[in-house]
Amino acid sequence: MKVLALAIEIGGTKLQAALGTHDGEILARERGVAPASDGAAAILAWFDTAVPKLIEKAAQQNATITGIGVGFGGPVETATGKALVSHQVGGWSDYPIKQQFESRFNLPTFVGNDSSVSAWGEYVCGAGKGTRTFCYMNIGSGIGGGFVINGTLHDGQGYGAAEIGHTYIANWTDPKPGAQNKLENLCSGWSIEKRLRATPTLKPDTPLHVLCAGNPQRITCALLGQAAREGDALAIQSLDEVARGIGAALSNVITLIHPERIAMGGGVSLLGDVLLNPIRKHVDALCFGVFRGKYEIVPCALGEDVVLVGCLLLAPH
Image (cartoon, rainbow, N blue to C red):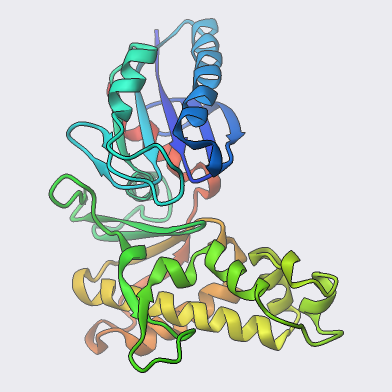
């Protein structure tokens, strides 16, 4: 009899559930979106509909599901599978995710932070293959990370680790001398868009002006990247500022644990080399000189599957 697992991704707004093998192969998937304003209850209600569909598909294949892996968009107490807090969706504070999924679906459940789970997925099946010390960084609606050190997923004291988005960097948007802010507040997707949408006017006939039809409220990270590729000065400057902030954070990661490879994931990272090349430039300028050139910064290999693959690998069996 075939042995399978379920994978659950609980993001800020993005929801996914998948049926797959314990070595990370996805066989079937359900996708959904829940507005952050709807809170945790609406998200769980979506999974109450999506998961039984996947369980039915497993039954049709005469397969046994042995466990569920959950990647949650916030810090988790690993031993209990309890969500500690979500910085984007209400209703998750001290929420017993493991207990809820086990009672709903009668399957043993593992719960981890989505970026840590992603780090393991990339390490085993993606951009981290062949390394011993590896870092994954997610740049999306928030910013997170995960470390694999000497072949082991690093979990700190059992509450996660690599919360890169909550490290502090110089705040170039604040004129006060020495001003700082969290990396996530300056370089996440929502913060980039919020900052640019506050631009009073755009220079007429520039690529960014044309792409957003002269309305800054239409600016997205994807449009910003396209404008930068077309040579737009404001877009290039904006992405370089973001890259400098991310580069400062990653240079500290390299100085502290010196990973062989750093994989960049999340929606903002999909901008590609128009963002990754400036990040590489700033990391190279800021990192400990002895380590310079002895690491790689690469795109994540698993794309939008990264959380699900990690969940399948970590699901009980």
